[in-house]
Length: 388
Ligand code: FEO
Image 1: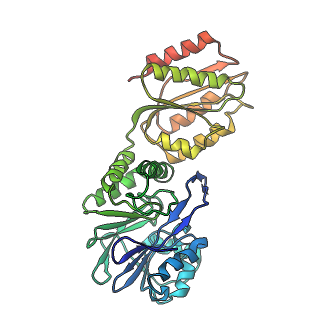
Image 2: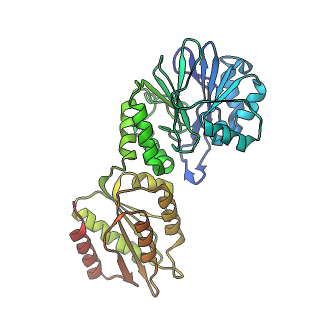
Image 3: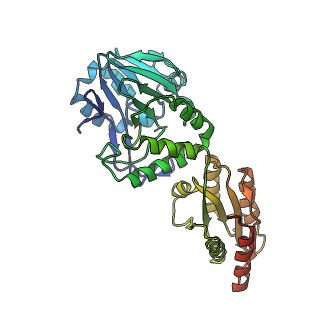
């Protein structure tokens, strides 16, 4: 349980959640970390805490640097309990510490913990001197809760960004120079797709504010600290927040007796014929949060379901509910599926795609089992409709 030095007076003292596999519905196959940062300036300062069950781990790390009772300032940048869960016990250890949070943070902490804590509230532009260094506060409203806040230390050029730029990734390494970059980037993309995506306008506003700062290091509240790849992750965030897509197609479906799968493969053939990279996902075998990672930069999204009891399959409904909530924009959608009688599923899928404001390709609906000739015709019709 060692602290990890960011420089000669700032330490990572967070917790590593090696076994976490489900973060309210987001599959976290690589676990996560809750990052807390200890600043050993004249005012000893702790930025954020950890989930309640990792409190002792955090205290052990802090204790290797300083007695936790000596902490002067605690900054709560986010109410969500993966970061504030350690606050009640910490404030018992250092009852005289000043608790700093955002205006919505004060309301949120009170609503969560029902304590009469003495808050000092910060907003964008406010700063506090710690001694030889300063922390400047930046409200990060709705990236991704109303209370999120970050802080920037101009003397070291470190941005403590809170959830923004995070990744759910449990590692003993702390910096982007120490761990495979493709995995870090994948997990940063998955984090954006599953957490930040609905808040593109607020993220763009935050990125505009950050563009005025000279940032040498981004220390988020989850995962790896960005040191050598700050520019790359900021560029990715700019692209993701702008809903920029690549010429890539996803075919996402479930099937009962293989007919919807046959249509899915005919659609795949059409994209292949147009030299557009295509991926097929059977919803029985892949989690919706993993699919969203691919949705983040895919232009074409085709969704298929047979009709079961006058409805789409529950797996498809679950994906569409999740996707609609995350609200990816500027996509081209296509609804498809098979049916025996009734055949409501395709129109139901298409209605959700319309609600998301996507441009639509003509839907495909096949009764019972498509024959080879029909599959060729379906592929040909799609080829004629795809631009690219
Ligand atoms: Fe990592 Fe929004 O909490």
